[in-house]
Image (cartoon, rainbow, N blue to C red; front, side, top):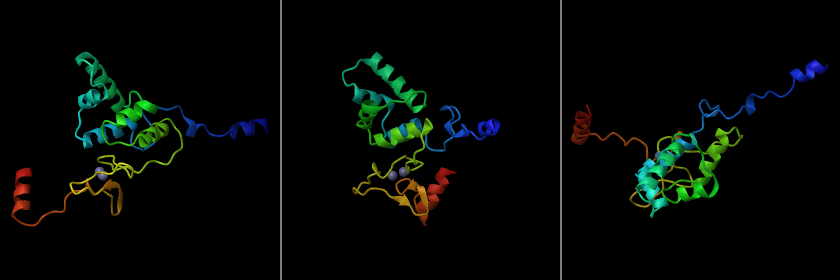
Length: 166
Ligand SMILES: [Zn+2]
Ligand SMILES: [Zn+2]
């Protein structure tokens, strides 16, 4: 009986140590999230570092750039006010980042709904030139309307475009 109850002990599979190299989750990694949001805003790591620390010299900015790169490579995570400070330098959602870190560490949370291309979400939608926010592509809840391939245009321009791309 004792033996039996040992065998029936809850499996530890769901509570594995966080393994950043081979995560069990398919959720976007926190670092990928940061990179996609930064690139969507067309900002470099150096832009972000300089916004965070306007008075810093070149050596300190370079240090900050390498730290930000570590975050984007999922070699380190940040929490709390640091996340909010980064979120103030380009449109991203600190709550989404925090949730992705938690998921990566094995916490059972609902995956935030993100655009697979630009990582926008309901709380930081892409805003077009007319000031309209993006929405989810019909039938594809992992892609926003801002990242959708443009509808093929019939006519000379479309043909010219294809020829140039070829
Ligand atoms: Zn998008
Ligand atoms: Zn979007």
